[in-house]
Length: 169
Image (cartoon, rainbow, N blue to C red; front, side, top):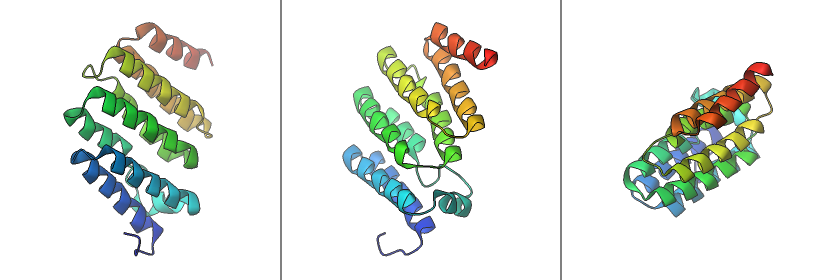
């Protein structure tokens, strides 16, 4: 993969490698592959990668990896990977990509397959990521997805409070 010159090709290849590693149960190496994607995005123009792929999440398939892990791994492994992966977003300066990842992850984090405490902790992390999105419209969409997920996850009062805050402004 390192021999591929085009960043818009190398980044999704690393993303697919991360997905493959996660499906084999190698969560640590999957996280390192995602860190490689983020390093590429940081060193180049993230918009170039997004424009070339058309799908903002294609190169950084955090939601897909979480879905694979949720099917096969202990909920603690899912929680730890999600916390680490969402922390990577600090290096990605592409609001549409980060918002899309947050929206897709929020749906997964609401899953009753995860213990309640893990769901709320993951959604809190997703909310933290959403709140840091620089584009206001993308931020609102991501926060709305987290509010909806909180309501679905059983944290109805917190979800309703977020919705009320979004409506009031």
